[in-house]
Length: 123
Image 1 (cartoon, rainbow, N blue to C red):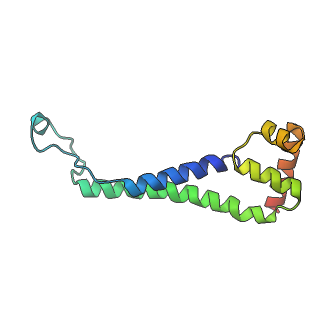
Image 2: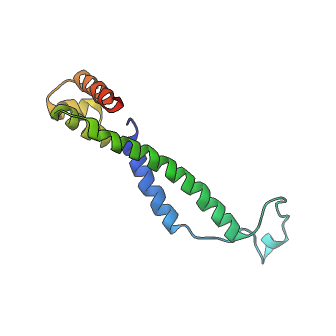
Image 3: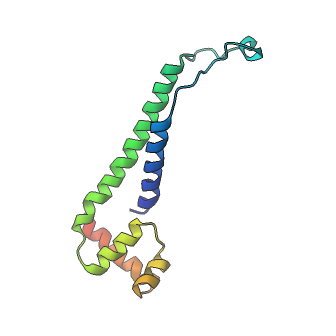
């Protein structure tokens, strides 16, 4: 829950990047670069390299997606107007002091409400 907003932004950015990712040649065929020594042991197939990049990226995207879904599924357990309001603003990435000013309460009260929200989600 702490990094929900950051993970959501990261997930959307990574999905967009993955959709726009294109394969690129990994070895030069002409010019001075073609005469330089090549790396040994790696594949020079650009399609294979592209598939490996996409696969590792998709694994990271799916991990972030699972974390987001876990929090989203637990939000239904939260009851109470104040608790739901604090949860909403926490998921939007707002700091305790900002939430406290918005809801006319101290930042320590917001922290206590957050603890109640976490307790509700874990039950």
